[in-house]
Length: 402
Image (cartoon, rainbow, N blue to C red; front, side):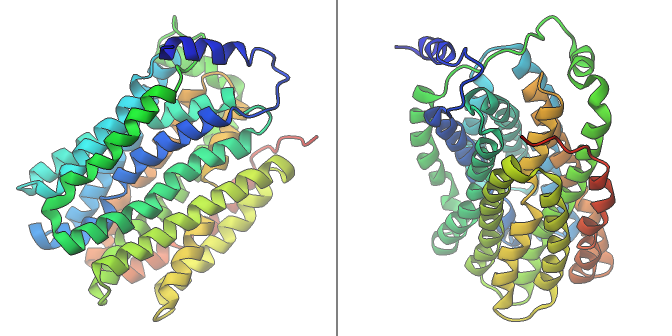
């Protein structure tokens, strides 16, 4: 039975809108696609200290690598979401991880800084391809457990950003940067499985509309709450990515080994994976805003602790900071899709892509101020931002609970 037939059969089994069961097989496959794509994407940040040494980079150039990655991996996602909503194809959800695993694995053999930027760029484009499509497909297979299912998808990516740094720093630390291309073997094996399982996505009935007309149809009169969610997501991402980019450099300067730095990054991301699942589960019961209030307040507290508490506290606070700053990541996508249920891939791309990318490409600003002053004092200012977004969260309408 080919992929088209499998998709048609799956679609027939969920024509009844009252179905509440989750298609576990498909949700798992989508989460695995998310995991494997982000597993390779996660190689870039923990290798930044190695790139600094190999290419004699300034902190501004470090911010350029991070900003370029986020620009191409996330800011361009709305165009991918637009095409995913218009055409039924597996090209985006499966071709994206394939492109990422190939070119990110090649960063270790880049002969110059310019070639390194090319490899990072191509890997980033692959990342932009699968995120909106995978997120847009979740609601079709989630039954009545949408928040939880979306958090499982999110966990796949966040867990990848926790395990990927451990893997690549161990390999590079023991065998050198030149062995990184061999890492793609794992991903290629996983892709064989995914090509057999992942079904075709469903269209959204927008094929006859252009980009801006589609956006108008999708947003309609709910553009204000969507805009609020987007701004909050941008700020959250800017804070999270600033810490993810410069904490490895700071810890390396203060004597931590490459593997120790990888552990710090992994704890930060693994905690985010766990908190995403917990917040997704709770959101189906108590709503989104109580989670936003508490998570943003505690994020500021533990981001500060990560910077200033000494010794082994860095590991504890890396976990707690990641836990709270990333707890609301799946909630932004879930809220946006509930406000605008038509055009799920494009809405997901606005929250996971454009918001994430806009916050991410501001990372060079953090790098510039870190060059002028210091990493610790600059991140200390950045850490205040989550608690300042509480007044924006208050303005978002809360959905009624049954």
